[in-house]
Amino acid sequence: MPLRSTAVGHLFDPITVRPDARWCMAFAAGVPDDRHELFATDAHLVVHPLFPVAPEWEQIVGNRSLPEGLTHDEARRGIHVAHDLVLHRPLQAGEGLSVRAHITGVGRRPAGASQEMLFVATDANGDVVWRTRFTSLFLGVELEGEPVATELEWPATPETARAEAAEPIAVRQSHVGVLDAHVYSECARIWNPIHTDVVAARAAGLPAPILHGTATLARAVSIVTDLAGPQLGHVRRIAGRFGAMVALGSTIDVRLLSSEDDTLTFDVLDQHGKRAISGGLIQLSR
Image (cartoon, rainbow, N blue to C red; front, side, top):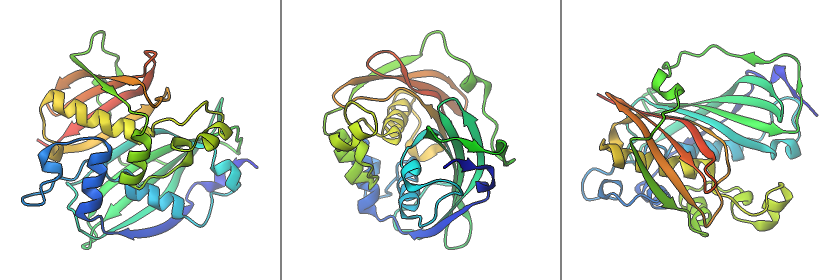
């Protein structure tokens, strides 16, 4: 069945979460990022800025209804192709959050139908803690109707994030262990069998399990902020597009492309030199 344009506006079942220190520290360990502030329960525990992907995934897999037109089999073909997270403030371990999501746009690409969701998390006072634009591509699925894109109030993307740097400012290699997808799955509580089960991976057309896109992005954020110097608690926006798949047991290159004022740009190359993440952007609080 096709994905229909009328899916725009579809509401996902809201969830409430209370990420405790254990979950927040486990996420950091699964990245992996061993900076003291991510485990400082004796002081001020900093939550990794990409942690919101964990409750967002919980909402996706716990949703009882599908966008109009999609079957469960087609929904399972969805791959994460772009991510844009805006943090209105740092997360606090132990706080209660309400997470809501709805479909804001659908499109047509050569490989299938695309869909954009907007996640919004609010605290007990009703104040927004974060917003995420989450773009998926449903492989082999057609779009019925015309593409629709809802106009959203969103920070502009700096020109530096659009341009490709001739030479990176700094590069750090990072080895992806053969067990890293298992560790990230359990620590982040983001489980998709194509990352850990060889049978499921082959059924999806992959030769073997691959690292999660959000695991690659989280690792890149940790490395880029370490290279450039800002603290993780100052991160207010993370964006990037997912491309080449990262094989377990391989080595990736995380490249800092520019560092200007409150904006860092980066990309990630896989073991073959192909971009696993392009258009990488980190914006910081002043």
